[in-house]
Image 1 (cartoon, rainbow over the protein chains, first blue to last red):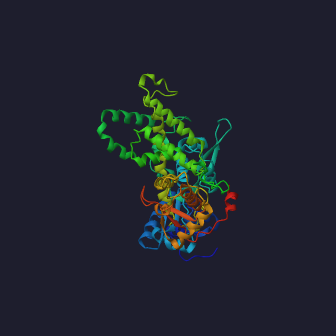
Image 2 (cartoon, helix red, strand yellow):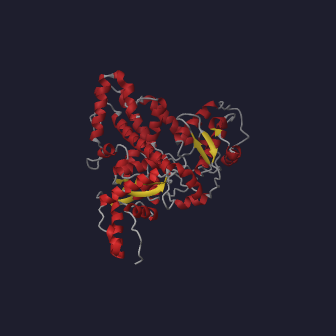
Image 3 (cartoon, one colour):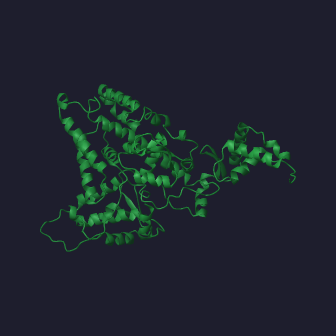
Length: 230
Length: 259
């Protein structure tokens, strides 16, 4: 193998991996590359073959900080369980111009709502999405599947074995989310579903009952109460 | 009312992706009423008004809208009865017949808020590119494009315009009939060179309901084709329509292929 004068630092290697990767890289994937490269090239390259994941995470943190400090226009973001090298947000308009991505095609409200319901309640049946939204979601769901933001994750045991839907890796990437639990109120909105597949949401019911009692006892406090739900 | 549009006119086939719950939440927000204490009578009346308008526009009204109308009527009638004679409700023993609906609305509202959060993230991510410079390719899809203004905001604007229009005199025979295609041309002409136009001003001076409805349908059609965008800076502000710069007249055929 070609001889190299000085071995790069771990963070340099990680930096170049992130630059070359076409999708977010997880610490695990980075570790695998280091191990494989050690096995493949041998010699001095073995040095990084035994690196542990937490060392990688530490190196990424260091690299992230250095990138930010040296104003390179690049940054490392945690997206879809991995790391992604991307431009800094305030440089976006120029990149958009370069790539000719200046059209504002955003998802419609119905599409975003359907996505939100799938994200919180997955795996979820189409009929369950419809019962939350109160309207057919056939077309919207089909488009979301086509855009690879939503996918079929399983079939349920119900009669007709209907499909169960869930969000994709691409969903996390599109919205720049590290993981699903980054969505607000994940615990609360998820919890309502827990008791098998029925339409009752005990937690919600309890909350409403409580509110009803409050409303009965203290009529004048109404205005303050409504604000939090808005 | 139903024959406001000439028969031979091509029909604008606009699918409504918003549902009855959206309409109810819209009305609740508009009237600033407490979601936990909905004035059922008033809301039901308004709901029916919107349904009528949607019928005039030939919008595809999903069965769900009719079901909700029936639900509202049931709740309304139950509320009129004194407690003792109401009789048992099928599955629950709640005292207030509105609870089921309220529960559904509150739950849906939470998801709507979550959707708003996703929308904000999406806006931020528009400025973020990784090495491939790839974003999810949304393309010109029938359910994209109405992102800023909901269909109910638009219908509400139409309602105002119709209210302002002078009452039609029955003894007059209309020689002029307006068509949607004519209004499409007119709209493109008057929003040329990025000139913004408020819906209020657009409808001003229009004398017949038929003309207003045709114009309105032309707006919807152009939005669907991604030639116009409607925006509303604050809730219940005037709606402004603008031509999308460089918006290519998209072949209608392509639309069908996607389905």
